[in-house]
Image (cartoon, rainbow, N blue to C red):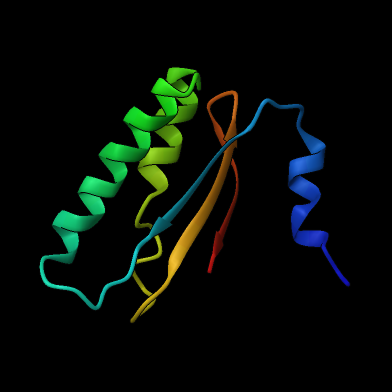
Length: 89
């Protein structure tokens, strides 16, 4: 099994914040839904102890997969105010 896409996670020390969010575009008012997911990701990460810069960069990445149609989501991993890995699921 090739897991080279995870190399970035091993290259930087944690702690890591991870966000898994539905960013599907096949719903009514999809832009509003993405905005709500982004706000919730930010507030949830802060509540769970993430530093503000990491929470902000994670929230800003929510919905950056706008070019993908249909049902899908994002997995985001950030640390120390830097987005380290993003994957579409």
